[in-house]
Image 1 (tube, helix red, strand yellow):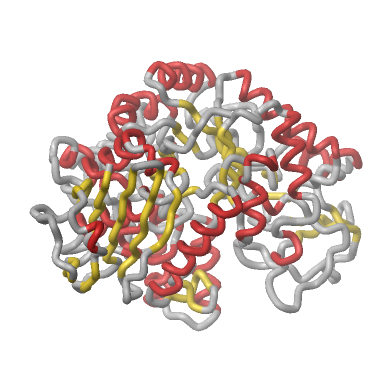
Image 2: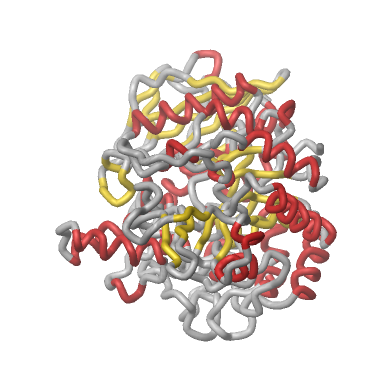
Amino acid sequence: MEDFSDKVVYQIYPKSFRDTNGDGFGDISGITEKLDYLQELGVDYLWLTPFFPSPQRDNGYDVADYRKINPKFGTMEELENLIRKSEERGIKIMLDMVFNHTSTQHEWFQKAQKGDENYQKYYIFKEGTPDHVPTNWKSKFGGSAWEYIPKLKKWYLHLYDVTQADLNWDNPKVREELKEILRFWKEKGIKAFRFDVINLVSKPEQMEDDFEGDGRRFYSDGPHIHEYLKELVSDAGIEDFITVGEMSSTSLEHCIRYSAPKEKELSMCFNFHHLKVDYKDGNKWALKDVDYKKLKKLFIEWQIGMQQGDGWNTLFWCNHDQPRIVSRMGDEGIYWKESAKMLAGMIHFMRGTPYIYQGEEIGMLNAHYPSIEQYRDIESLNYYQILLENGKTKKEALEILAARSRDNSRTPMQWNKEKYGGFSKEEPWIPMSAEFRKEITVEAQQNDKNSILTFYKKLVAMRKKYPVIAKGKISFLETETDMVLAYQRIFQEQQIVVFCNLGRKEQNIKIPKEQSSWEILLENYEGRKIPFEERYTMKPYEIMVLGKI
């Protein structure tokens, strides 16, 4: 397999990236149109979220046909053109495969629903009566994880929306179908795959009630998950591809196994523990301040643990399911630019593969919608009702959605200061962020040497220039405060050290004597001089990278 340690992935949510035909809905041609911009940014892979035929109950993660293009996004010819034009610029395409479940509109489920027993075995059906649910497991979108079909006198499992029926991976025919889908896209020139919630696909043989949680402890990292992944990757002939698994509620030990090269499963893993440090009692829909002590502890634990086990991390703050990180852990006002740069640099210099989510590179902010009518996400709409039923006022429920909704990341990409941000000439499928400001656009930042966009370009270029960033060992430094994260990377003769002030208050740190005269490789406040005094005062959201290169 090629060395991917210096590669950077850019995630595109096509629906919100660029609309070229004026229907308010982003399309494949819109991605092709922006390839020069992406090449200039320096990224190596474009991860595209699903653009397959879909009822769009879950914004495309409810797939009705894995081998076709949803006409709203364009045609197969347009996708083939994108693949070709990307490769001309040294960029490869990563497809997002949703293999835990299909839409109930998929022909497999349609046949199962009509009584075809062969296709019923493609899913997880349980015989029963309407008043006896197979287990008390909860759907991740709210309510029961089971749905009854009276005509069949059977329940089917859906860990997500009721229209997303879980596949039965214990059926070899299902696994063969999924391998064929990967072979199909490989033939088209796709060079990487991201697997959605892949660690949930192996369910236990005996399903039982969960009296401690929502059922996830029984099916997360399930009994056959490692053997099924090995088989999928090997038989589909994608061992030399970049493959990344989204891992829901996983463990460090499992992620080492998923991503260690000797296991021949995946190249790397997404885990989300660091993005739950502002969940009250582990509940996404209960707000609390960021626990910085826990955040630091998790980064240290996963970075060191994966290094020791020869696993490989993904480095990310944002994606299509997460709020904007500047709104969440940075500052939307006076320190907007500084906090966006610090948060970016903090993870880009770590051990792993960085992912940039569209708009992150210009510091886009949360939507801050004032009305429930502006939200589109099925999870958010469901939980708005649940919050009201649990006694929250409409104002309180909207405050929670403003902080947590997945729609925060799905607002249109802000290319310029036009009415719809250069995303479209017509009204977009989802409203623009209420925080749409002219300085938070590509146009405003493109030629500004101090912009967030320019900072991201430097981060990507530095990973390719200095092997210590891509290949170095990592160790963490004691900083005497939870509000400063500091770490060192070492590779052969190269060394760098990274200091990050995580908050809006100044912090005093001690810079080790041997590092005080190193070169300043990157900073987000101009005018720092070396050598440093033994004690150094970091400004709000400051990042400083020192190097002996």
